[in-house]
Length: 553
Ligand code: CTP
Ligand code: MG
Image (cartoon, rainbow, N blue to C red; front, side, top):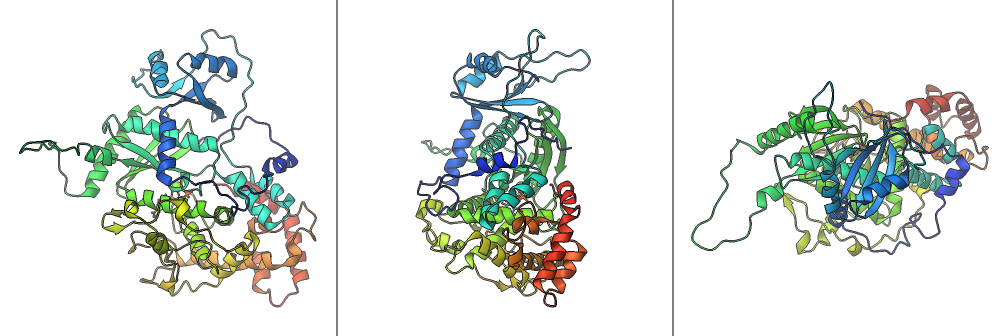
């Protein structure tokens, strides 16, 4: 169902990519020096939402002159920003400086008339641009990439890196959401909001999850939250006199039923009238009811929920953790990619560990360092002021929202050390008796017999990894031990291996083979040299090619 985004730009050489990845010193590379005030999550969300409201999505002809295109659209007002991308055709995202320009453009736009089919009239901000006469234009469009590099290219890039720290930062830069992709995510939410507004005029559709929590990887799903609080709380101004008025409404027995009814009509609406919304599924009996669909033009797989404010709050918490110290994101991306490469995570729901759980494990591990790299949630709560106080459905979700009030960590450990120690730590963690808890930053006794217990930070009686089976957990532990061992072998570092052989992070991203597994199990009996010889032999075989073919979400 998911469209594959074809990229317009020519595939670059590794050397070009390396140049592209060079950073000026003192930039995001280490994070310690970054003194710029950092935006609150709500500020960032509001700014991006307002930008998205001034933006249109335009399906363009294959060949188009960028200058003429911009000149044509500028008739409606100045353009602030634009970019093109490919997804089964060429699309443009155009952000006007003023919101009125969108209305002006819509006023000059017609509903298509078709010979064989009938168009259901719907005035959205998703338009098609047609050429009046069929003379084709010269194409000179630079298109923005919406997907990460292929695994073959990633392995090459990693092999050319200078150190494991450099490898993790390279991986982060290649996989993180680009500015354009983030804009496209907010725009997609904004387009869906317009459709939902047909029923609920004051609703807000907000992105949450990995699209906004700083841990999103190019190609990740788009989680959306239909926020009806504005509709509920609009008329709060007091009137004088001895009367008050209330809306006549329909009542249902529970919040869950209300959620199901709302999502059901929105699902129908997206299915029948939503331009570009395909494969709409209403999954209303899930613990958290949702509508899943593909937004064809952006290529995003979307999950729309409502009454899910806690998930938005946990996205805000992760945003804070991801922004506090740049090592956090680099490590999380490395671990997520490692887990995906070994099929520990999957895009299909099941007994697998999720990316959300892995992120919690990394945060917990970083809270356990000495000195800690990340503060506990309880300590973020003690830094909160009156404005931060927040209770959702009886759960205390209070924590400091202003990043600038959190003291940076004095810990200067390298990413290389942290990666090794992460595998070491969880390769030996007492999962049978302890739970992971980022609120206190301490292991606690497991309250039930789930193989993996990670306490939900806000709904503290819930386990976010309740779905994980014993065998999946065991697979995680085995692979963590194996990776810790591979990273400890000094011989795998790039000095002793020619640069085009996978080493460091690239070596642990390669699929595990029985050969290598048995190497791990017998590790104490074998000399390191002999093991490395084995490893390199297996790497020389066609496994790099296999990895390239199989390892993508
Ligand atoms: N969430 C939660 N409890 C869970 C699962 C999810 O609170 N058991 C919330 C988290 O805030 C999570 C969001 O729902 O970030 C979206 O879930 P999901 O899409 O599964 O995870 P992402 O963090 O978005 O990661 P991915 O890139 O895999 O989509
Ligand atoms: Mg998600």
